[in-house]
Image (cartoon, rainbow, N blue to C red):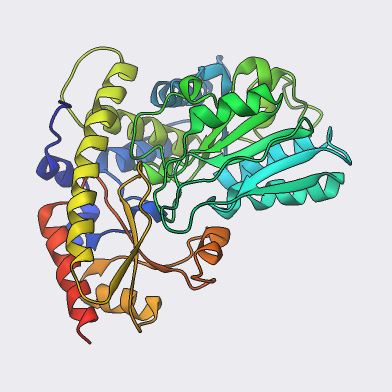
Length: 398
């Protein structure tokens, strides 16, 4: 049995919760612990300079970057020498897509899925089109929301798949997909943005050649992360400025890194590692904390799902066997945005939309309007759940 997470103690770490709202908007960006804000402020108010080892300011900047790479490596089971930072997951994915597409041509194929956020769809579609390559689509079952078989051929060059759907929570069998992708001689790019805040991640076990995520989804600042093996990165040649270092991973990072955001990212990983008490290496503490979090959040999701399903007129979407604590629902006869507005008026933050998972929303028949999404976070308590259910029940009676 995983360790217990003390939700009340977790909540005390988040100043924003004092405003009184029940936050189910974490899939779009979590709230921020005080420790992360302090780390960002500390980096901004300390003397920093361009990275180097001569002055104290240079060393401080260099140490922030090195420490952040190690923190992400500990979070994801990656090599710190393969950690690349960028403005966002979307920006990093576009960069990789454009870079890989230089070696694609007519007859080559790229596979994307209708389950994914558009940030793991459109960059690949556009890169393939620019190279004259073809795009193949993997669909998902509209009832269970389980991902269908990935269409692979001997011409497949890359498969892009989500680690967890940000719209429905569905967690595809990424290791199984990776085995088939690699047997076909292709690369696997995994969008881990929605998976990383909710479950232990080991990029090697997943079989991901590339794994991207966003610290602001797991209590950190707004930036993006891409991890790959240093050996793979060493074979890739990005466009870069002539004076920029050719070293990996730095040659993939354009311009000066935001030191304050990387300091906050390290603090966010440390916060995750401390969700349950423990000693030892940070990687071990991360795995223990995330296993406990996954257990707790899955139970909370199941309870909330049952309560919402009992409300007349409320329709839930998604019944995948493995899911993150994410629920998508609608109320019969009511516009999702109006439902979200009513919840907001009751102090419950549960937004409506397609949340950039446009292909998934359309495939479900929800169009571009989507539905209402409720995401559970480590700071979600019983009172939050009660408020959400009561607010949805009141809307459903209208």
